[in-house]
Structure formats: C-alpha cells, structure tokens
Length: 223
Image 1 (cartoon, rainbow, N blue to C red):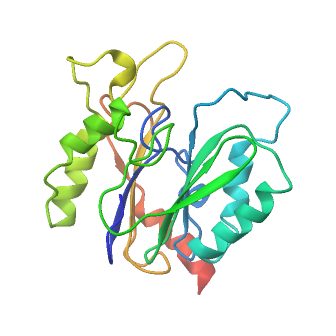
Image 2 (spheres, one colour):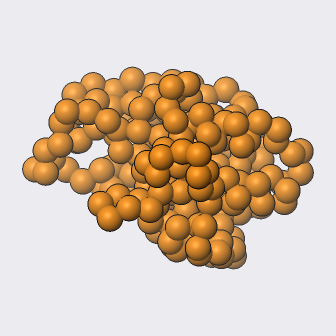
Image 3 (cartoon, rainbow, N blue to C red):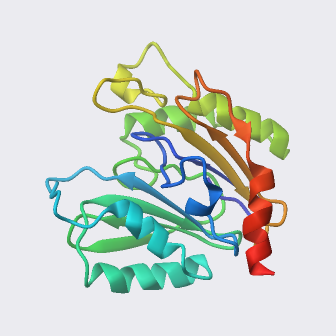
C-alpha cells in the first residue's frame, strides 16, 4: 500500500500480500536511505532448484540508493541472471513499483499513490481471492497512522471462515502458510520517522513487536 508522504506498507506474509526477506532484521528489508524491497512467489510453470536464490536478489536490490535506481539495476540483472518466478515491490517515500518476473522476462508497473495489493499474480489482480478479501477489509482507510497501523494488523491476521483456507489472508497449512508479518511505514528518503512492526509467526497468534528503534542503527549508516 502506498501513499504520499508517510507510506504504510503491509509486508512479509508468505503466501499472502506481500513478502520480504526480512524476518526480524529490518536491514534485510530496508536500507539506510529508506529503500524497501519485498518479494512474493509468483505462479508459473518454472520451479528450477538450480536457479539463484530470490532472497539473494532482495539483498542485491537493496544496494541501490532509491527505488528508481533499484528498478534500473533489476532490469539489467534479469537480462543476465535467471530466477524462479517472483514479484517484487520496490518502494521509497517518493516512488513505488511492482515488478512481475515470469522466469524469463520482467515487466514493471508504476504504483501511483493509493492502495495497492500484491500476492502471487499481478499487482491489484481483481480475480485473486486474497486480494479481493484484503481490498474489502481496507475499503475505508483511516487518515491517522496509529489507527491505520492497527487496521493493518487486524487485516494481516484475518481468518474469514466463509473462505477456503488457501484464500484467507492469514494461512495455516502443513506445506505452506504465513510464517511472519511486517508492517513498515516510510516517511522520508532515509529512515527518519520510519516504523517497523514485526510478528514472528502468524499474526493471528503472534503479537507485533515494535522494532522501530532498530532502524536508528541503519539510519546512522547514512549520516
């Protein structure tokens, strides 16, 4: 989800909108200049275990100074290195982009200010059941950040009993499911006033911890 000025981004839900390589380390999702890189699986026929790890792709993309320069690097890199299909969210406080990579070619969509949802198909896919559910729950967004943050936490933990388990936002399963969840807000082209909230497990069962103070050590690197 993107917006002007402070940009709240719901992230890191395996098999749900959307994922990062972060775990509990903000430095694996954000760099000191306020660049965020998040990744999801993408549906496709290619699943080649010999291809390079997409987690490493996230780390490499974070070496850029801005979302736009990261996009330029990624398109050049995809022309020389193969990965299994994936989607990427690349964002800073000024711009946001979605990249769809099918295992051979990449395409990009600019994300204008507003609500955007990314799962394992195209960004804002109107036919994706989890995107449909998230959009319905986020239909009326509050103007103040604390209320919006609490809303995002509730949405990330949603278990609608009217949906089959694989269509719910928070997924529990033996083979795949929600491993963790992060809520990230960016305000400037660094980490000033940024927030990072992390649930180390399904957010329906694990409360979010405020890891925002850890961002100070990354922000210091940019000074």
